[in-house]
Image (cartoon, rainbow, N blue to C red):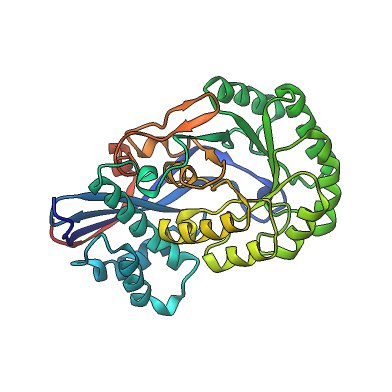
Length: 376
């Protein structure tokens, strides 16, 4: 098949995924947000003149989904007729089509779905899993579970879910902290560590709820539990505060998931504000931007543990030069026909071309809005 091709059709869909249980982290218990009951996805499906198809998505928790969809629907038509191999050129075209709203936040997240679809398509053209196209360093990535460790769950529920996850082959467990009563946080962490034993990787995530002094005090109290990392102990944009903790504590500091541009991540990296960086490809604008910041992170000697969206991040984590983690969430399972395989603490790169996922009929049924451009 010749490499010369052109985008002939783009379909955008807004899909609302209901969660089976209302989710609460520290932002809920401190009154900043309400429990999360759904996740809104922007899905892009791209078809070329040669009949190749690419699938990509971005998402929003709580507010933002309609904004992503609206922006993508305004600019997507500018990509019609372009060679899908020219991902960087297409990104520039779409950025300039919507230049007045900037290059971060909802604007870049809207373009992320298209960018991811183009990378999926490129890997399918090569008949390779995306990780292999990018140049995989490993065929499986360490994985940890987050979806069972939220603050609305009791310690008994968390440990029961942890047992299920470990039995399923997941290698680590992350739980949420950041309650108004720090003593309750410590009680919960101590109970989970005792249940898991010393051999299982345990992480905690404060979801930005501590000020600098509290984060330092809690970080020192948490040292005894031999945590793999403490995540987002202070405000996500407080690079200096994170840097101070990284220097002061033995436990590694992880952050980055809430940042929505390479520039924001660059400031984090230059400040030496973490030991483990946690970029989110849909949030920073797609795979193209993720690869840019991954190069910066590798040059700085940082470990990598991408946030959420394991269907995308498994491939990107596998292509990072040093050992990585990928976050396991089962929330997205109803959206796709396929399931990722897990064994011996690792998530395996699928042998299917591209991302290796296709939308389910249930995802189609949950579609609340759609727009099409070009010809089928």
